[in-house]
Amino acid sequence: MGIRLDIRRGRNVVSTLHAHLVFTPKYRRGVFTGELLRRCEETLIEVCDSFGAELVGFTDEHDHVHLLVRYPPKVALSTPVNSLKGVSARLLRKEYGPHVRKYLWDGHFWSPSYCAGRFTLNACRSPGGPGDLAVPFSKTSTVLASSRTTSSSGWK
Image: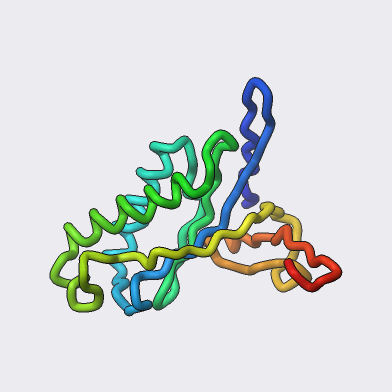
């Protein structure tokens, strides 16, 4: 089963923009449970829909979550990121208050920072190849190929 590469077409633009986002909870506390993560993913899907974006992938680690978001070119990436973090934090603290308060305090859920990377989806590349980031965003073993370049100064 391949990855659907939907190309957005507008009057003056043809695009397929994807961002790999990493959100960490404040203080990197182990606040995540299976139920909380399922609700978090549902919330993130709803927020993406409100921006015309799509949550293509969602995975979790013990102290952070990975999101793969397909978004339209008319939206600055920081706008949906702020809404994704704000809405999900508010709802998760409201619905799982006692559990969340054990790990996090002062009304925070997510760390104020986030990691964002630009990726090109490529279903033909094998995992572990140069420039690949094998992150299991779906049960179909999606492979994300990074569009990284290194300059002569060593900065990426």
